[in-house]
Image 1 (tube, rainbow, N blue to C red):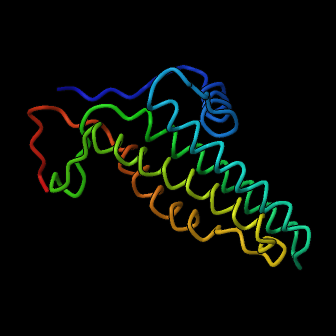
Image 2 (cartoon, rainbow, N blue to C red):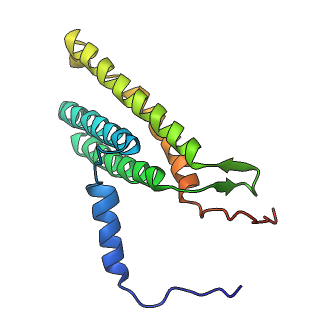
Image 3 (cartoon, rainbow, N blue to C red):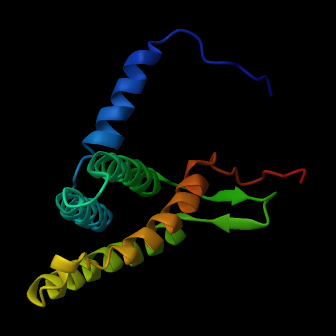
Length: 168
């Protein structure tokens, strides 16, 4: 099978499209279950970052913390849309681990439940005035962000063929 490299095309337009459709303004599709899960994750993550941007104004380094939360939102948007768009089976570590669409869907459901659960934690923090002491339950979503990154890496891997034999 010959290997061909992509030729031509406008790479700047492609990067602009990725930036606008995955990072800054991912499409929120409320017609499918997967779309609702992605919307819940992205909107709850946006609420998380807005609350922490507000609280960053009372910190010692408000610009650094604000920049961190803007980057967090962009990374989360990109990773979640990457996971949601993954189709087929992915093989990693020489084919030892296999991830199918079902695994990505289960991960999105668990991720959406955790993000919605965090909203309830935030409401409890507001009602108990704990938010004025900096308590927001944000540690929950910080741990979730660490889980999103490797799954997004797996989703970014090329789709495995049916008869593919790995060398490793």
